[in-house]
Length: 112
Image 1 (cartoon, rainbow, N blue to C red):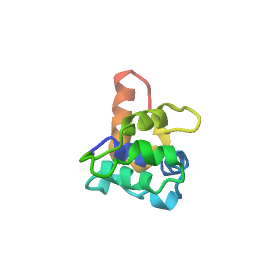
Image 2 (cartoon, one colour):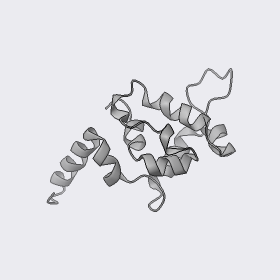
Image 3 (spheres, rainbow, N blue to C red):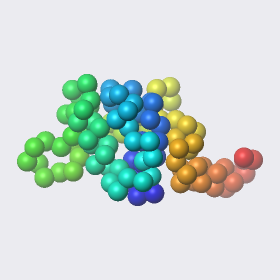
Image 4 (spheres, helix red, strand yellow):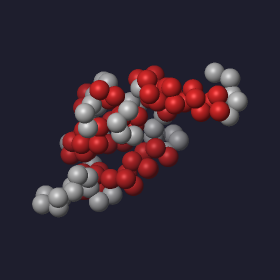
């Protein structure tokens, strides 16, 4: 797994809703992406929500790879227990996340 964004991208349905884009914009196999962060920015660039575009997409000429509130938006997505990221759903698509979850469950003594 190259970047945490690949795990967030693995919950295609909820991420598409959060970013206000069609689910077809979200890659089917995010673990195969060379640069999940730039993919996330490109998806946000097509958002119907102005705040997402302004927060996540870097301003022209800024020299930055992400927008000024990129991290804050992803944290909001990850923390929203009702409409945000669903690790259990994402783990079905992301093998590395699935392995991580299984390992964490073993560490805390919860049967799989």
